Amino acid sequence: MAEPTAHRVVIVGGGFGGLFAAKFLRRTPVQITLIDRTNHHTFQPLLYQLATGILSEGAVAPPLREVLRRHRNVQVELGYVTGFDLQAKTVTCVRPLGAPLSVPYDSLIVAAGSGGSYFGHDEFGRFAPGMKTIDDALELRARIFGAFEMAELEEEPDAQRTWLTFAVIGAGPTGVEMAGQIAELSKRALKRNFRRIDPASAQVLLFDGGEEPLATFGDRLCAIATKEIERAGVQLRMHSRVTDVKPDAIVVQGPDGEERVACHTKVWSAGVQASPLARLLADATGASTDRAGRIEVLPDCTLPGHPEVYAVGDMMSLNRLPGVAEVAMQSGIHAARAIKHRVAHGEVSTKPFKYRDLGSMATIARFRAIVSFKGIKVGGFIGWMMWAFVHLTFLTGFKNRGIALLKWLSAFVGKSRDERTITMQQASGRIIAMGAGVKPGEEDLSRFVESQPAPEGQVRPGR
Ligand SMILES: Cc1cc2nc3c(=O)[nH]c(=O)nc-3n(C[C@H](O)[C@H](O)[C@H](O)COP(=O)(O)OP(=O)(O)OC[C@H]3O[C@@H](n4cnc5c(N)ncnc54)[C@H](O)[C@@H]3O)c2cc1C
Image (spheres, rainbow, N blue to C red):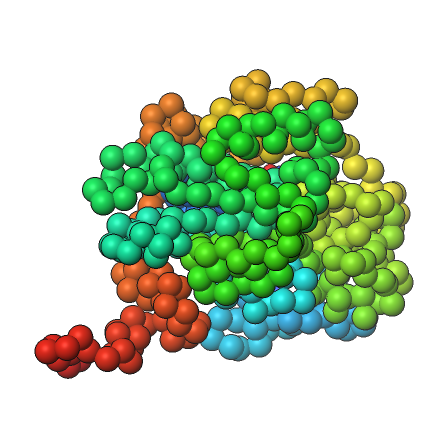
């Protein structure tokens, strides 16, 4: 445990940047307060496996207190950060029941990540959730498995088809992974689960305005990816921009003009917007923000005029680095190392952050992935093995790695999807409401049912 008078470090965010910074400072005589709006770290790269029933939420979201239990110089606070006073050196946050909290610091690391962007159409989010948080993935899981349930209940072929059409918007890594796994569910994992519908007849459509899926991987890997996506049973719709999202349809502007695609289940994976905290820090320091709202930091990840304040990970803009986990981890460690230097030597280190590029990868379907690493480009099964090795290595917690490995064997060698619980609240509320176009906040089915005329000759039971 650090001395009460020790250097105070506040870390905002327990994602990749914040968590790796806190871990790096384990043996440094500092007092760390790590503030997060949730009680867990989120391993975002595997969220799609939570949304498609392969992994449970515990496997991808270990509790921060548990991960840091041996780090006696870390105090974890559940709170929503709302502002900073960079002159008084305090962070302001709101606790779950609304009580404000002001936390003083000597050094501050802000690693609040990013969220989805609907490019000015936030109203799309109601019917096409993104996938950034555990809440998002659980919501999507309920919608995806709920759609098959609703199709089974439906007798009218067109209505059944609407439930069995899945639209994924955005063909970057997240969109491709989601589409691939929904196709896998329908073609393989849900076989023999239903009596009236054939899940394999589901259509999985992947829309993107660009020319190729996974465009950042270059031509060779894009070509491999395109082949594998189609082989997995996903219908690729490139050059197709989604211009409107309705409860039971999307409107697409494609090469052949405008088209209305009837579907209830949509996944939005098209845009990224930095945490609003980036804007707050930019306003306070005169730093600029880029198009995605990321704050432009100095080469050492600090903010202009504030060598004690670092912005790292997805919310920082530096040397056009991508918003990936490796950048977040390495920049978090970089900030922590500079603080360690300051505590040890009493002077500020302005050493620039140097990113070590460890390549990029994306899974497409079962045993299929593409990997780009230092000029080496690999696809197919070898790519998938590399992907599996890297993700198991970085997954937080030994137990979670074991669980993930077993679940992968069971889902990919076998066919099982064990994690597909739909809660009563979701079943009676959101899924059915989704089909009925009920507004958020009015999802309680009992209220919806009561608002409908009772079938002839029947009365509704009182509550
Ligand atoms: C679906 C998906 C798949 C991905 N796949 C890959 C992949 O395969 N490989 C890869 O390298 N990268 C991948 N990424 C990107 C990678 O996950 C991010 O780059 C990384 O998580 C960024 O780390 P971070 O610490 O900056 O932010 P995050 O990990 O997002 O952490 C931010 C933390 O800050 C907290 N927070 C935010 N605002 C507040 C507030 N106001 N108050 C308190 N707490 C707050 C959040 O709760 C969160 O815990 C993926 C991302 C997504 C969404």
